[in-house]
Length: 101
Image (cartoon, rainbow, N blue to C red):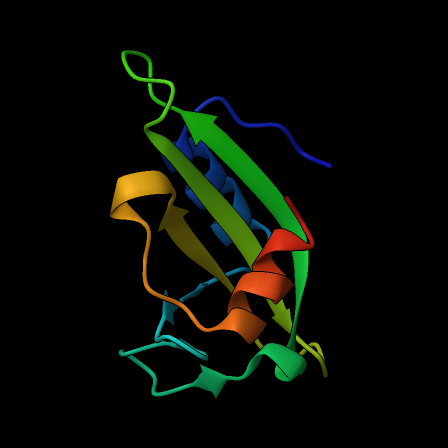
């Protein structure tokens, strides 16, 4: 597993490793607005997770997930905030993401 000191380092490192699609969580699926690619929780695997805490506020936490489709043809990233700014997600998506915390 690679290590990164910042979110930007993680995103750049993952892109250089082929994780080029930027996904967003859309409640019960991952979607790339640029390409229209959509993945349900059963259609992707989490390859790596990188967590970062803010320097001034430990509760200001971000996570970067390296995602691969089950068939390995699509590789991308999602970045999420936790706590007050966390996205609203389905129970299935929460279960999938929390398995890798």
